[in-house]
Image: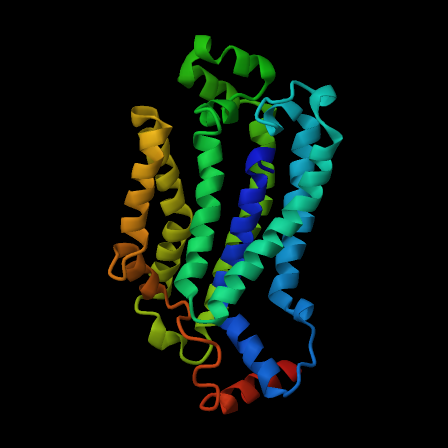
Length: 303
């Protein structure tokens, strides 16, 4: 349901976020498989991976293709003026690329979660959403938000004459915005419910309360701000620096600032991440000590 140029970034970010939200369950899944001796389950049987793929294929792809057909100019960020300007490969890449992007994001974050590098899995989410918002806010030529707020090719062509306010009002009263509202309620609503549900499910597992240092409601708010709010703020900041200093100075300066905010061990972002209680140990850590607990989980699921 998003413009083609940003769709793959969103798919990757969604997949990574789903894996991070289900981090504890993924570690339990790996421990259960290890407890059975030789691997008897295909990695493709992972229910969280399957649900991620289902979300991408059933919700993200159809809504995006609908908007591409309904308003090809907006869906391509006005690269194409109409249906005749849409290359058939766009449809193929969109329909096939969204599920692949979601799976790649999930697998990348899953690998990091399983080896105890949960914070780096979180950075996969941040990176994906930063590229998504960066495309929508700045784009490839500094006109990203203008392209997003222009519902039609004529609106985009007349942007400089109408101004930001008038164009925004036209967008908010357009059929494209109405479609985004309807689809957003389904796609984004399902996405948020899934992320929160998997977090709550993970916190109910043994040891989760010890790692989570704040109330569940506050932990959900921190997680949402870190995964969605921080990348948006970063995209706006990067766009502002590029506009003020140019790409050759603005982007390196933003990279330095982002590194200082995200990478130091005592950074505020790491501190907030630690409050949420996402796994930070290798999935094999304490495997012998928790064998009984894992057996109980297996028995409950079998029942």
